[in-house]
Image (cartoon, rainbow, N blue to C red; front, top):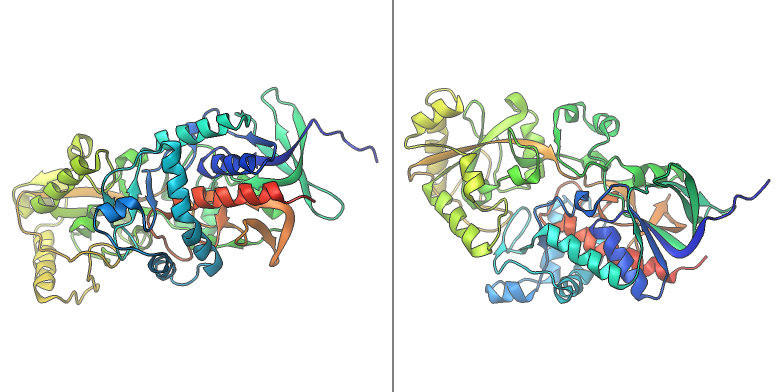
Length: 467
């Protein structure tokens, strides 16, 4: 057999230039490795991190302390495990908690700016959602990669993993802009940070046929390339069966700019018939799962002027927009009315149904017992439900969407890809490409969080592993 020559050779090859890939590149370079990053898309701004809301779950930060919030790694671990219905890999959750504060401080030192406020969302016992501009975040990480003199080659996807006779990953094939294929040797390791599979219609419909009707708002290149390559080597997977949409996108929305989550601020959720169908304090992925069974797979977030004003103030205090706040653009997307009867007409909800649902809900709030769905908080375990009674009233038509997938390649706490419980030598993965961390549901802010935290772990470990 004639050996095909390598086109180039480095210590670490990274597939993907989102949050996970850029963090992996920084950490590998800091460990003394030569690094090369390949990105399928033409620009930075199409990764899950770049198109996200920019909310990240951190614990014990200086910002939390400034807001009088007491948190701990143990509480974070408990919250993530409970939200994931204990289907999570405990070692991955512990690895996240152990490294998240250091990652927050690394990002801050690089120049990432944070909102002065912290929000409580799905799965949280205390507010730990730290908000930043995701575009600025990606640009800052890219500058840090440039400082380390790591090349990032755009429109150059990794198409294949190359192994030796022992099954160790020793390099990759990439498709160059010219259309030619080249082989790049990775002396120490390859990191798959190529995102999820929200654009892989075939895989999604195998999970649930209804996903063919769910809007995908993920990055355009998220076709599950990393997952496909890892599966080609016999890699195991985790949590793919738990992939679900998120209940937050406007019914006419197309991007993450069109999302709102004001049921965590005191609103309720009803279907198109005006009836509540879920506990509004649970994860928005669990809510989206239930919404798939509702008429038109759609619901309305219903709230009053009290919630509206709180969300406007939150926008001003945060200094930037988020799903928990209201700016002029999102206000224009709302249906509003001075009476519930008028709001029913505007939302095409049967007459009297919305009034009945809110009267019943307000009775539950006053009595302290939601006998229908057991709601006891605003979000996760935080906050107390409140009556909906101050006009005007508002409705936000909402559907589930696939901004990201939350299952994928199985890895250990070192971010080594696993095959039947054992690492595949030379292969690492991080970010949306991996599974096992979230479990059966989703703790808000941990998607970008795991990309950044686990990207650092993958890059550092790949740099030190020689085979």
